[in-house]
Length: 245
Image 1 (cartoon, rainbow, N blue to C red):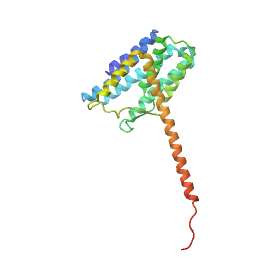
Image 2 (cartoon, helix red, strand yellow):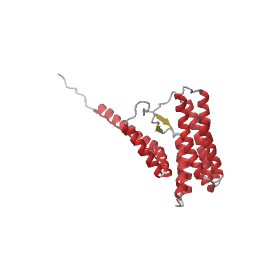
Image 3 (cartoon, helix red, strand yellow):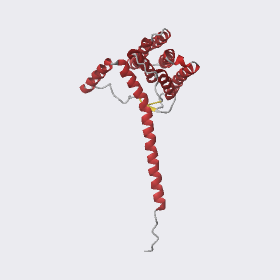
């Protein structure tokens, strides 16, 4: 499964070099599918190993670090010259640093959250953008500038301290309720209607969710500090009873 994910990422690079941007974008999503399967299959077959974990990280670097950056550079960022490939490099470097940090935090970090935007999600944003614009033939004149901004933003989010939900608290090992199965079918149906638009929107909203939650938590922390400070001040200024009994 890991080798198939690596092959899909490599194919995305070749497709981008040949100008077949839709195939390259789809290949990155295919790599995400295989990347999600390899770990689960390893745990189901009790074949997890340190070698497999390192191999998976190297494959992720190609499929979700190098391939999306080269694809979007060939697609739009090449119009910006040196700035374009520098921004693409920021994305690639962000993915490498994100994967290195993830490997050093295994077993230590809270499994409910990811620190920084996961590299597959960042790759999905870029691949989804390319796929959506190409399939729907969107021509607004702002595609290149938006691609430049999104590439830089996702690259920086990968190395940020913004927390993202890992959805690992969802327990799919027990019996799955019928309503859950129905929702899964509905999601698949909705995605098949406009896969490029839906997948890009889902990846973009996930990338945005971490920023929104971080801002919300910061505001909550500031309000709690203000309340604590106000209560401490009121306690200090409270008049003492000096009357004699």
